[in-house]
Length: 197
Image (cartoon, rainbow, N blue to C red; front, side):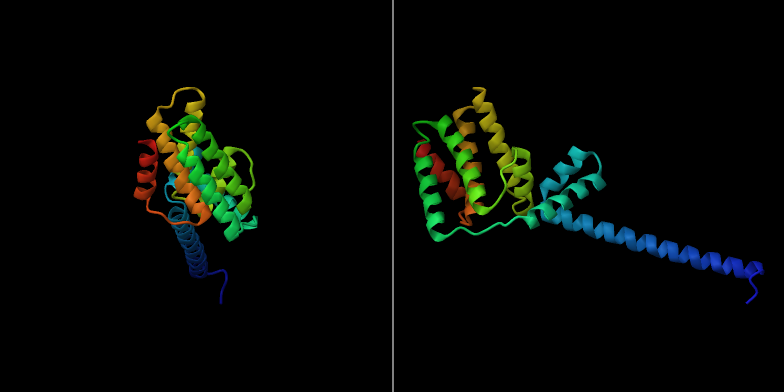
């Protein structure tokens, strides 16, 4: 092979260009698949994080780091005794809604946090808790944020009784998921309406 021949150099450049293009295409396809997996796993949380970070790559890095952090946690199932106690605590809390809707929202937030601790979630600030929840319960993290926003407005005296009812419904959905109890959302809303009536 004559390495001084222009044809040889052209062939080598074409081969190198083909290898670079193939590597780029493979890398792009891997990034596309990773993005798709993250979108599917995190649902609406994916879009929220992209908007918050202002950049898809930064958002995806954040979501991947969340997954790694939660994988290192020792999330445990509740014993039947603990699950029964938490159910009883929630039922008692919910029955007090009519007499004290403001207090019940605070209690609901506290009970959800207690349940998270019992399951093995660390109790950092609210955003860290929400981020941790988003890994395994992505469909409920937005309701958790909504409940917390209502509870914050309530502390400022700006939440209506209907908003407080919604907050309890939102907390209940997350509570049931963390407790590993499946109840249809309409049943949850109906139970709060009955207590509220």
